[in-house]
Image (cartoon, rainbow over all chains, first blue to last red; front, side, top):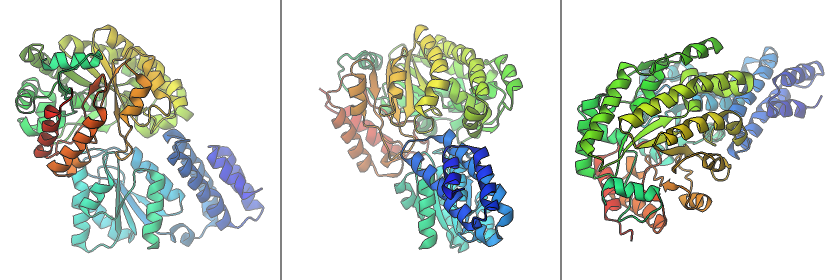
Length: 208
Length: 348
């Protein structure tokens, strides 16, 4: 059983095959880190690239993420806690007053799929919650999402609240109405208009 | 030409005396001129007052309504739990479709709630006051987008693979309800149905799934509303030309397309769209409502507006607009700067 079989099964959205291939790889003695990094995580990079190129769309992204998660569930008991958290912790949520979650969920799944520890705060998250849970989890990056132009100003307030609290976590923003210019204007550390781009941005920020 | 004549001329590919000026201005209008934002979106007399003040100052070539309708009134009539904050758009707090059993229930709903009647009253009051000189446009949503409101976007997107019969069944239930509301809007005085196809745009859904799940219910609604006398103007984000979605849109009885930008930095060039549609239908421009208009200075807004107008100069069937809803918090001086450029532009 080749690692590429796991990767290909995720890309082909075949959840059953992913689970079976991961089980087989474990039995065959394939190193767990390879199954995780070269199989499952690498598959989401391929999926992300295909999404960015317009080869696949949201339903396929969601199905791929589910397939990857199914494989990860099989693998998890064999992994040490370090393996799952060593890349960094990312907090994500849709800001207060906004209940839209599709973009946030896509980013959440892609970031988790890339091997980061993700704390998803859900939607309609107030400023205090972002601040306190960033402290609690010692998060490296915080992702703010907004679909409504009416809730975008809350992003600026969160950036301000992080400054006042002395938090060092990087803040990145996204969502349909959000732009790079807006990110710069409010002092955020970055912006992405798609989920794979958010993963790349988080990798860069954490590596910096 | 008055505003109605100008808009009709552009929609029918006839010469215009100046650029038709039709931005998605409802939210700023309600914010600048409304007694409260919420009431101006939803309540007849407040809608009337806000839009009449706006026309006096901005001299737009249409009145654009509907954010309260598509975001709140329609989902609420279909059993969603909706919150109506004072200063932002309605928010769906709880969806209403969890299984096929809920679909059967949805089909029996009465769309004409008190909130719907209050909204329709606003349309009637405006129609009376505008005396046919300024057309009324109303945002509207497709059965697929309504389905995502009722079921949840992620859920519907997953259902496409895991429960396709629910996606079809839910839209089948929605189609007659969607048509009933559209008919009531047209009877109340709406001239243009601005048909928002938000969740099936080619940024989110593949052309293959568009054809399999969306095209038929959308065609049923658009064709019927057109037959009832409205001009139907689909609004869709993403590259509708490259993905071939525009070909599906052109199979329907539509009168124009307004390309939006779901991701604001990837904007469809309307010249590319024009090349595709020719003189078959009109095209609304798509200036970014979240760019300089929202966060820049008036000078930058004027520059961007002028760039759009110059690129479109000479194009038949051109109507100036924004690529979707403008934020209520758009600085008024920016909106005035955009408005001034459009009004003063030497089109001929």
